[in-house]
Image (cartoon, rainbow, N blue to C red; front, side):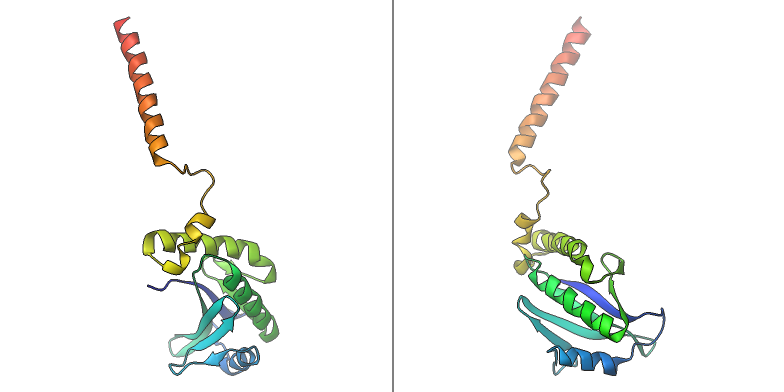
Amino acid sequence: MSATYDFLLQPQENGAELPLEPLEAALKERGAKTRPDGAWLWSFAGGDVVGLPMRENGKVIAFELKVPLKDTTTLVSAALKAAAEVAQAQKLRLLDPQLNYPVTFDSEASVGEEYLRQARYAGEYLGVSEAIGATTLAARPDESSNPGLRILLALIVFGVVLFITFRVMTG
């Protein structure tokens, strides 16, 4: 199973058509290559990002970048910086659909946090092997590492409440 974190390169104006030729030329300048199936493959130190034109009613409305979920933010950070650079050069908007707002170079912290949250979920519940390590990296500090301790504490509290109730009722 493959899970991804997505970015969208869109025109600044909602509903406008995205001119693909200049965008594809900018991607090619930055090392992206076209695959035989028509998708784009953009290689970074941490892995590969896949790019696809997004069409609606026959016109291209966005270019989707799919970053695979992994246990580190290396790949998503590199992809964010490169995509933000392309967006700035092409006068496009870079949207993060997971956060539901446009992102820039300065969004690395919020994007990284959301990326790890999704990677942790994918590793724990969807069985995405590349993201399994994120389950320990992004563990919430308020979670107890020992569920048996929680059960024992719950039993002790229940016993104390039961004892106090019995003492009050018998007087």
